Length: 152
Image (cartoon, rainbow, N blue to C red):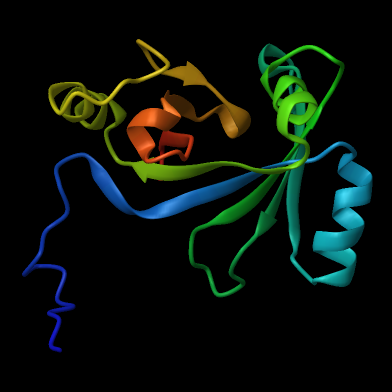
């Protein structure tokens, strides 16, 4: 079983970055979750912030310490309102989404539309870290909520 790992032999589709930006996990209590992921499992906390537009407090933990991209994003609701609070109320804490990086989010969005992919956002919106984001409907993502985020 031979596979060509030369990136020039298999170029990325236009506008893509070729890596997972982050994995989002919904949690009830951010401080409790940090005890598990940071203090017990050893992931390094990079930053914390609030995203009032999404009614959420987030913590970004590095998935790699060698300079590689990628984070674990812990999402805790600020109140009983908002998407994360609704997710936890319906399904409980757990895997919320996978975010794929895009070098050009508009190109990726258009390619998705042309392929019949249902996007939950008509235009990019600002997410954590000031990144422009768009979500794909889970039915179009094989049951997985997929976030496309700009800025690599």
